[in-house]
Image (spheres, rainbow, N blue to C red):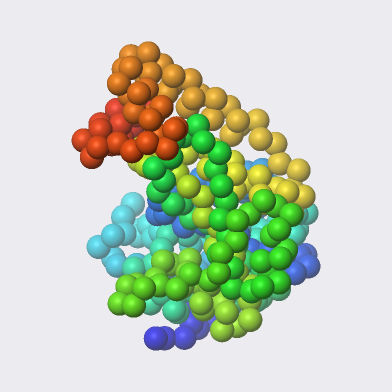
Length: 276
């Protein structure tokens, strides 16, 4: 376990922020829920790059692309907005030195005076895409749990990773932050299993709605509502082309289960149709 050094990160911009919140999203998460949600937040709030964790040493060169003889490392970038008193961190999950990487993240957060941290993740769900998205928050502080009550978030005790298993990266961030007395909430939203290979804009909207409500961001939901509408229309078109697929989804809506072959067919046909 190696402690982070100042050379592991770089502050690139100065913003007048007073104890901002930090929202973290991982680019390689299930259904890219973190990346997509942060893209909406960054665009909607006008956040600008302000710091980065330098990727050298955290990602193997074998996985780094090269363009014009220059290595293109994965993104590990902070964006900030003074107007909204908000800091966001969009990053790939490092392949090594988790503790050192997260220490660098928290060192940057400390430089900006961050008061609380939210991470995002997706839970693969057997429910249909028409069902409401429930937001679950795993917290590391009782006061933080109480502060979530007005936002219709189901809270749970801090998750304990089973013995012998590697913790989820967001859970590890929560553990590292606790050592520094930083409040962290791991937010989880269900994504229907047959939307995992594509996108679930309803899930992203549930997360965005929470952040908009908590931090009074005044976001415009027009674009994501349109994305949801387009997806619904395409799935309805698929129903007309394949009544069997509609029957599978209707069964999920009533709490029924699908056979393995039926689930695989649902994933394949929905994914292929939505990618057209």
